[in-house]
Length: 546
Image (cartoon, rainbow, N blue to C red; front, side, top):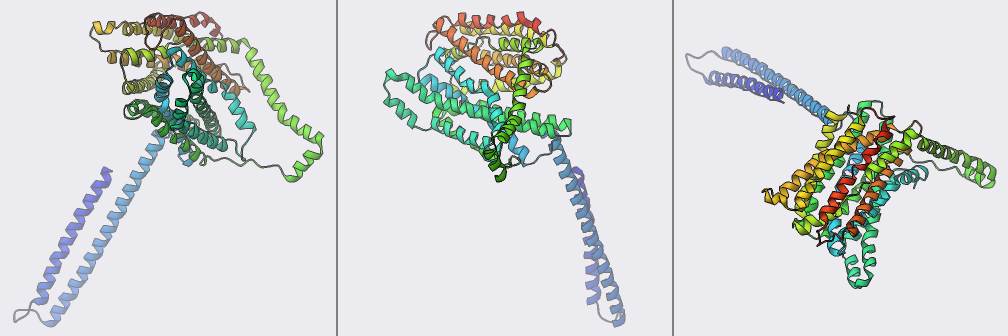
């Protein structure tokens, strides 16, 4: 850009000098043409002088035109180089060497929507807390139920692979997920569910809960379906790419888009609740799934060819042929199931799998802690939104720390020491619960921000090795289905941990107003997170660099 700018200035200076010369020539010509009298030249001399001046003028004019054209060509060439350099820079840094096209942009938008749908997460919590008047134990139990659709993700994958809709295996499912998600969020955002709940007597509170939980459950299922389908698209594009760096870049830009969506929604999820009702936030969020349905049309997918009429007739008339074709379709699926079962029976697979389940299923007191922050400490939605923003930001920092410093550290060592450090950090919750931080002059908000930032960094450093471990134990031939199964077990373990935390909250009588046993609940959940380290020996045969 600087070279182009200097070239333009030099061209302007040269053009200015040329025009000044022409101006002086023109004045001299006018003075000669007007000159007459005894001392003036004769007519023939004046004509010859005029011809020479005219010729000189034309030559100067042609020279100026050539210089202007040359300057324009130089400037256009510089601008072309500038455009090329900017395009190359964007392709390398933003798209990670993957050539951008409408399909890639559509995939990134879908991932962005997945991250941005957390915009309604805080509104969902306040609906369960305020409108339904649920206690900490009940809300924790319902939160666990809403995670269930994520535990059956392999079923979504099998459906999209085996049963194409309207001739497409990916595009049609994304459109259905987007439209169904729009419907569910719209139902949560409109007023008629509230009107129905107002007409229901207090004795039928389970019906009120059902009117809220069912749309939320279906919305969670649509997000899970969308996640599985778009992951399948990315896997296909990654597999078909000849450039390994570009293939990895596609994964990075997709998850980067999801992270950006999560960061943006983290703050606005709280600030919007300061100026509108929780159901209004659901109304705004309802338009995000429509972006999924619209961008699904940009996904490049070959239409599944329908069977020829003659073949269909033959299959109907010849049952044996049909049975043979059916066996050809079912046999590979049966073989894959047998291979999956054989893999799960291998100690090198089931021991790490069971360890990952134990690691993820430790109880949590997040539901009760939310009530403590809002009811006891008096923090509002905007503050909670800022906490979410800090958590998302420092989670990215945790990913960077893991990638920079821990990829060559043994997985067992990372899991052991992160467990120890997480227990130490968990003890700081007792400082906040007992209000000891106020005694030493630390405000509640500052303490929560600092504790959440440290926990987010540590959480990512502890979580990423478990993903690496899950990938390492997948044997050849069943990598995709086994990894999807492991991720479903991850989500199931989280559900179990949430439900155990709900049971402990109920047993300790921690309610929305009574936090007397909050310290016992927090300490119990914190100490119980140590028991998986006694099973780290199950990773001896598969443990390598993380």
